[in-house]
Length: 419
Ligand code: LLP
Image (cartoon, rainbow, N blue to C red; front, side):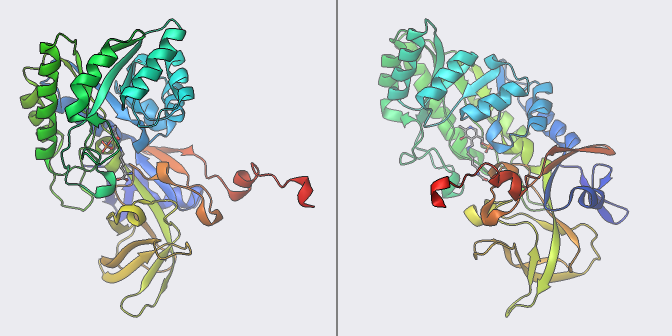
């Protein structure tokens, strides 16, 4: 459910015609709907209402825009961060340090120090070595770091291989079979308070069974640890719930997920922590683009749009599907390849796709671009960094400027010895 709908023959974000934004900001541009973000944040929270103690940390990586983070802070979300940069963003948005969870397989010493100094609430340790280093730093500062141990449950999330994280040969967490012993050794360290376990088996998960299996395994491990006398008060179940990318696609939603988690964790007597990203932001944003021209092809025409793989990387990286809709549809359809202007063939959004008929100068959107969209953008081919807009009813604001090449290359230097 989102608030990008046809009104008087053209797609609007809430009450704002997308064409109005295109005229004033140009294209390509990401557009987020405040009402959709709020709705998703609330639906996800309500889906977990049956669980006695919960903590919700928004996965900043899915959309780190400060306006998005500020909105989610208002909705009572903490933050799941994976770098010092994301931590700084969460803090800048006013999210209390105590509500920030620091995940990530390669936290550097500098990042561990910065996070301790900031007073973040929980470190999700990805290895014993990281825990030892964190304990050492904390001790030297006379501090106590609060942590969970991320465990790799060796469960196949049945999602795209590049976004699957819970199989034994993925780099994440410690091996399930080693986890109890590692937990015991970490719990004995001064400077470290081990309070629980963490798991995250992948993203865009469209089948709840693998998550259920993973959570059951985590529950068993939790009981083993408790029997051995260790304290386990927090269980972090990560993020990963998928969203529909195709109009009409049916996936398990937050309510199904909440019911599953509630059933599995009923007797856990722990605070159940969540790190949702895509389920909050995915359908809250679209990428607005203009058709540069339509070029004949051998099998089908190429619709060349002014957005490219540097603006929305998901199709080139994961063969991901994003619905493509004309902003002012005529009702006619065509079969075409949708491509961007970048000089490589991976800059392809869709092949032989039936789409609304479009011509040069028409506006169109890629749907479900609010998660892992702008945040993964880059400036390849010296393109501008794509701007972002947030809509609220009939008003809107630019929430990230377009960074023009001049701004970007102003940070570059030509050494004088090149003369
Ligand atoms: N927690 C951890 C530890 C994670 O690694 C992730 C995502 C999340 C939470 C949030 O997952 P979500 O609820 O958004 O599925 N760039 C890829 C997705 C990579 C996800 C990485 N980790 C894409 O565009 O599909």
